[in-house]
Image 1 (cartoon, one colour):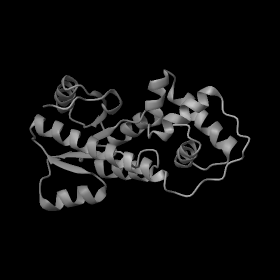
Image 2: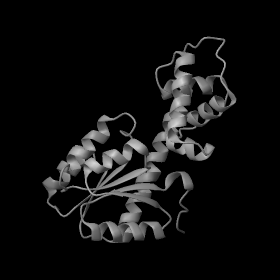
Image 3: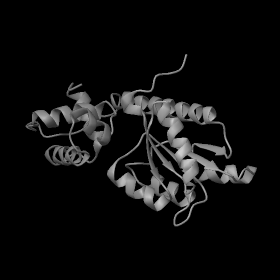
Length: 215
C-alpha cells in the first residue's frame, strides 16, 4: 500500500539548470502529492531557502553560478538547514563521483537518467529517516539536564502555542502554516522567548517546554 504524504512533510526544493527536467520532475512529484519549489542553480536556491525551508532538497550537481557541491556545503554549514535531507541528481555516474557527492553532504546520489518511481521511493525513504531522527532527538531531550530559566517568565498565549510546536520538532515554516501566520512572525516569537528565558536556541526552548509540561 502506498504511504500517504502528510501535509507537513511534502515540501520539496528542486534545483536543476535543465528546464525540461524541472518541468517533468515537478509535474510528476506534484501528481504524487508533493509541493515543489524550483531553482535553476545553487545561488538561486539559497535565496529560496531564506524565505522558506522545505522538507527535502533535490539538487543537480553540475550547474552554472553555483554547483551542487558548493550549494550543499552552504546548506550543511547553516544550522537552520543542516539537517535537511539532500538528494543529488547527476549524469556523472562513476564510483568516484558518487563518493564525492556523498562525502560532500548528500544523503542520496542518483544517476541520470532515472526512473521517476525510484526517485519517489528515495524521497519517501529519506523523509521517513529524517522524521525518525527528529523524533529521536525530541525524545532524548527528556533525559538531558534541566535548563535554568527565571521562575517568573510570562509567555503570551501565542508564544505558548509556538513553543509547544517547537517542542514537537516542527520547523518555523511548519509552525507558520499551522498558525496561519508568516514565518517571520514565528521567528519573532521565538526570538522574544529566547530573550525572556535567557536560553540560547530552539533546542533549549523545546527542552524547557517539555520540562514545564507544556506539551
